[in-house]
Image 1 (cartoon, rainbow, N blue to C red):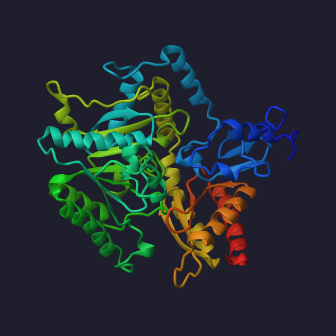
Image 2 (cartoon, rainbow, N blue to C red):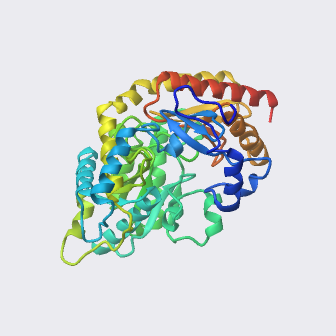
Image 3 (cartoon, rainbow, N blue to C red):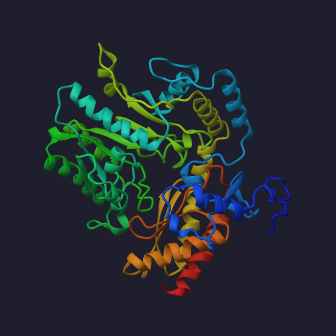
Length: 473
């Protein structure tokens, strides 16, 4: 499209206000993109400039339309351009635009805490607000350490998490994260991180043909790590309901029950990192409702506000919160913007929309269709594994389907960054080519997506994977 072309519904009008080349040059001079190789953008490689969105589509400064297959980083669950959310935010700004939660409270934070407690499983009734997911995980580790210290277990400071897992980039959350490329530039990190294998059934070192046996083996790796480190030194285990990094590793049947039993046996807190999975991504409010477990702490963010305002939360069980409710004990931790009134108002409206429009049902009704559509891509010789649930899927690419031979190093770079990512974007699909582990393409669209949207996304993947297979990387 040219700069003067107009999208017929009036959503995106590409005109002189949004010249992509002008913005791209200004961005190169002043804007530091996050998690990005800034050297990749030069005079011949413009920075994509997104200027408008409507529904499941977003439009760049040239007027080109894209389907958002990653929900703007797993966040934009309700789609773009929800006027009712904008109205709620404006109302709150006029009423009380800001007040901190440091020794004070305000109505929206109270109402949202009540709402989250009602939605959460078991006795998770206390809500500590943050401004994002990394802060929620940072808070959870600090809380776990102080919880044990208050109870006299002063040596419990270690944290166990899974290989390849991502839990954030603040120093504590980065320590829990298991990606060397993210961690190495900032060593030494906080001491006490212990890693165990991820639940990657496709590449299981043992019991690859028996999911239940693999579940027990995977859980036993956590128990062995606790015993190896000494139970008296381990504060918490951090796990996602479905692990994001590495490509949507779902828990094999029986895994969560075994993990819960192990944590209880050794007095270790179980933290469910649901920064991605909560609020509809996998078809339930929280992961425990999908996989039948109750953690001690849930960390959440992203879809809590559907991306319309920054907000995160740590939801804590009554048992863990109890020692902090007496005498002069305090959790000396917080952030200026935590529980921002506008963000809390937006979150309340977001949860109302999810419930009123029955969007959890939409995800559950379409998850099998989504899986079947992606499974059909196995006709293409480089498609090895399809895994995930709800609206959260990963497609692993392989050199050989029979042997599961993977790409690595320079060949993976040429495949993912050199071809797959560029071709998906050129064809109008925004999703993730993930090289944190074996090469995977991830799809996590807004939970308002229809089967027609799924067909568009999978159709583009078919074209791109077919082209990649023909090039024989």
